[in-house]
Image 1 (tube, helix red, strand yellow):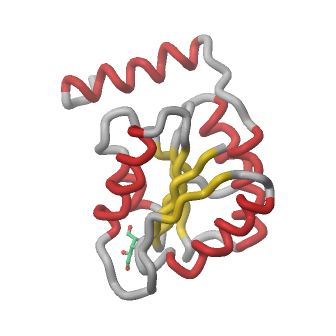
Image 2 (cartoon, rainbow, N blue to C red):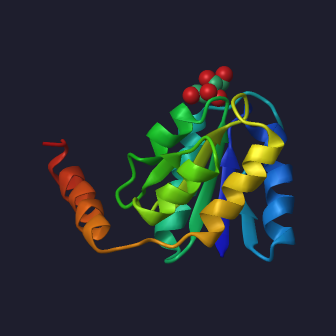
Length: 150
Ligand code: RB5
C-alpha cells in the first residue's frame, strides 16, 4: 500500500516509528512533514496529507496529533476523505471494513507503540466490505455536497 504521513508537533515523535513499521511491512510511505517538533498548526498538515491522498488514487494517509481529534476533523473537510480517529485494532479494522476509511488518525498522547502497531496492521489487512456499507459511504459524500448532514 502507498501511504502519505503527516503530523503536528504533538505527533512528531511517533512519525519515524510509524514509517519504520510500515516500510518493514513492505509499504511505500511519503513523509509530508513536519521536519522537527517545532510548533505547527495541525490543519495545515491535515490538508497536505488529505490532498495527497485525493490526488493519488488508491493511496492512504496517516495523521497524528496530540489527541488525533484536531487533525482528523481537519482532514474530513476535504471532499472524498474519510479520516478515522482510531484507538485500537478493532476501530482501525472497522474503519476500513465499514467506513472505507482512507486516512488513519490517532493521538500520540493517547495510544502507546504496541497499540499503534496493532492499529497499523489491522488497517492494512482489512478490506472494505461494500454492500450496505457502500450505500452509507455514498451518503456521506452526498451529505458533503449539500454542506450539512440530514
Ligand atoms: C497541540 O497541543 C494539540 O492541541 C494538537 O496536537 C491536537 O491534540 C489537537 O486536536
